[in-house]
Image 1: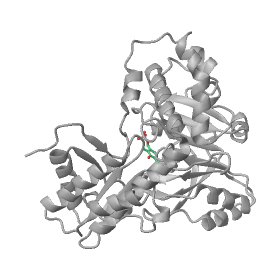
Image 2 (image 1 turned 90 degrees about the vertical axis):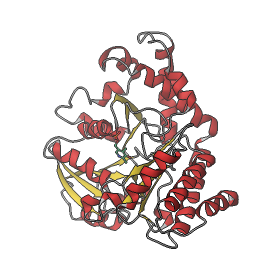
Image 3 (image 1 turned 30 degrees about the vertical axis):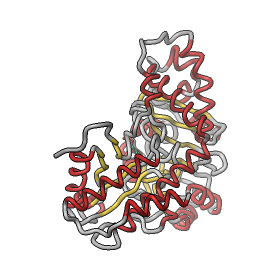
Amino acid sequence: MGLAQGRGYLAIPGPSVVPDAVQRAMHRAAPNIYQGELVEMMDGLITDLRDVAQSTGHVAIYIANGHGAWEASLANILAPGDRVLVPATGLFGLGWGRHAEAMGAAVDWLDFGNSATVDPDRIEATLRADPEHRIKAVLATHVDTSSSVRNDIAAIRAAIDAAGHPALLMADCIASLGCERFEMDDWGVDVMVSASQKGLMMPPGLGLVWFNDRAAAVQARLDRVSPYWNWTSRAAPEAFYQYFGGTAPTHHLYGMRAALDLIRAEGLGRVWDRHARLARAIWAAADRWGSEGAMRLNITDPALRSHAVTSLSLTSPDATRLRGWTEEVAGVTLGIGLGMAEQGTPEADGYFRIGHMGHVNAHMVLGALGAIEAGLAALDIPHGSGGVSAAAAALAAG
Ligand SMILES: *Cc1c(COP(=O)(O)O)cnc(C)c1O
């Protein structure tokens, strides 16, 4: 007895919902890559990518997903044997660090588990214990999409500075860019990675790396950089798109133009505000549901929660049952639990995630919450009542 016909909501934390305007922009014949509109579009794209990161630095565009952006950033900073500090707060922090290890770096791990933020004091202490300055970079995850924790990137910069350490600060903003406040220059971030399919509202396929002059100077001292990942030509569109980097990601560039137009039309501050307000509605519903039964928000302190993704726990296997119900009966696809089993906490069947990043509005969030509430009732999963009303009240309160 499905009620899923109609437009579905892919409420997973990436790939996210692709706006019609982005789809329309990508639906076109193959363009000329050597001259004309595509080439003329590049300067504006770079300008708007800088803006979305609040950066005045360089932007390199790769045909890649987020894992590719991870590798790109590391390939331009690390030589085998170099040392990095990785404060991990979930699966994605661990993942970036493991990429560094696999590329020959020595990793100092600070594992904060999967329901807490990075403690900047421990970063400062670790860097103080490195008087020879062997640690070349700190790899910090802004929002870890598995745990849905948001780390204070500016506080991590302050910790590096307090230790008087020259390590670069590298940030993974794959889940957060275009959703949460992020100010690359003001927060002292040297390298930032993101990808097209989350807050940037596009299909997967573009990996993006922002870097400042400090990071460029570190790259210039490397003996060699793998040619595909070398960001120097990638960040010079006139060179990359015509000669050096291989064929340009033509249709994705048109899609990105449309996505950045949407962000610009709304205003970046309003984009951040919309995500914050929608997140508060989701938390209000979850608090009500959790007043009876087993449902809990994975991150207890609202100030530490992402505005783009919410990770929740239920008794196993109820999370999997619930996801099945909302998708099959209501047309809402929820995200799977990720990385929780790996760190010794209950198996993935006991977690689910709601993606609320990018092209998401109040009726979509209320619809997803209504589907969850109906699923909880249909499946006899114990929960407190009134979640959707609480979410509506939160939205009404502004
Ligand atoms: C999605 C995500 C990644 C990985 O991106 P892919 O495109 O799936 O390779 C890395 N880090 C974070 C924080 C993410 O949200």
